[in-house]
Length: 149
Image 1 (cartoon, rainbow, N blue to C red):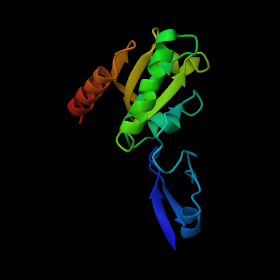
Image 2 (cartoon, rainbow, N blue to C red):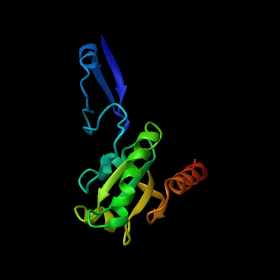
Image 3 (cartoon, rainbow, N blue to C red):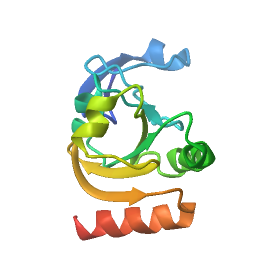
Image 4 (tube, rainbow, N blue to C red):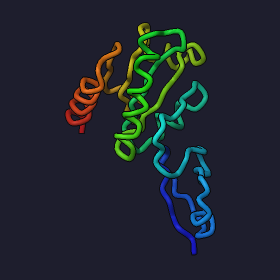
């Protein structure tokens, strides 16, 4: 028996066999190679895959712009991990290292990190700057998404 599974990142329909599902494999999308089942970890975004992940996501994207040398970014890391678990299936939580991906950071004019972009269709609809508490991130994320629905 074959099952049709929609990719949570790009929205493509994928065919999975009963055997693949029963063996506890971690199937990926045939188009964008993202995991087909909601990840409980932030998705790694790069300059090369930004369009596929952020632009092709059927879900809004919370993109954490960070760098390894940034103390506030490192402090915010566990919060981003928690948000990925809590928002799975509703928001794609992703991370982009600005040192390794200067084109995307430059495209959005990110000059201060940490900066979290709220994206829909690859376009910015909101921005959160600084290492703010988790409750504030959720408040601003919900306010932005509810006002742009």
